[in-house]
Image (cartoon, rainbow, N blue to C red):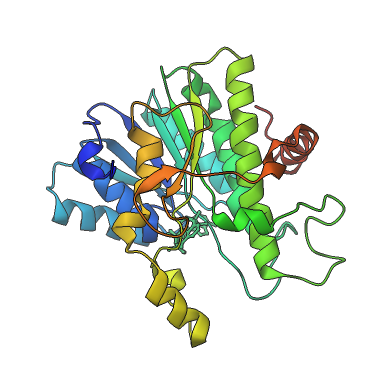
Length: 296
Ligand SMILES: NC(=O)c1ccc[n+]([C@@H]2O[C@H](COP(=O)([O-])OP(=O)(O)OC[C@H]3O[C@@H](n4cnc5c(N)ncnc54)[C@H](OP(=O)(O)O)[C@@H]3O)[C@@H](O)[C@H]2O)c1
């Protein structure tokens, strides 16, 4: 079966948050969920870009569509607290949380104002903190889902706990990004474990888009040329996450990606065996609590 947007059930009444919903895959996922009548919150770090994304969706669909934006900078704990507080004051349920935003393959080692390596800070710790602050509302929403966006690049990560900030080793951008995407999958697993041990009906699932032609793929040189030639269109790259978020048959810890690895319609994908290491998962969870100060 070529699972596609026609398979998305009507989402009327469902409250959905998507991080990084202003562009790239996040925007496409937002557009498709808005089309299916979801109550959509686009969480993005620029209020202006968020506003533009909301307007673009309304122009493409209709003005009465229920889509808003709330600012969220995943590298800034204050911003994450602020987002959660606005959300919790306005909404009483959260059916789907899509942790999609990311920085990718940063050329030089970059750190946040609090000294964290930028890939881990944005892609993992930020989403860990956000999900933690939204845990009570997820808990109170029957059959809620948390979708974690990872990448085939998780295979390049190894989470060196002695140097997660790449202070002592020569910086390697693919491995650093890989660490954060591996952390995403450990998080997805640990979150399901948490849901189970708390007796909650919510499920944690994951997805990756293969190689998709979002803006960030349009780099220069031979690598950029190859990416452009091989990358699938954004509408197709968005399907694994859309399936993870909406397919009624999805099971806890399903992982969806393109059928042929980098391209194709969504199908089951394989997480690297290292994601099964329970000690690493536990250690990462404990570190993430300490770093963010958020205890689920
Ligand atoms: N495209 C691919 O081929 C590919 C492959 C594997 C995995 N993925 C994964 O798919 C997801 C989406 O990728 P994409 O290609 O759509 O990326 P993208 O076009 O670069 O978009 C990234 C989004 O993340 C947001 N973001 C970055 N830093 C943020 C922060 N500190 N706080 C809040 N939002 C922040 C960006 O906001 P701004 O607009 O403000 O920068 C943007 O909305 C990511 O998780 C990525 O790892 C993509």
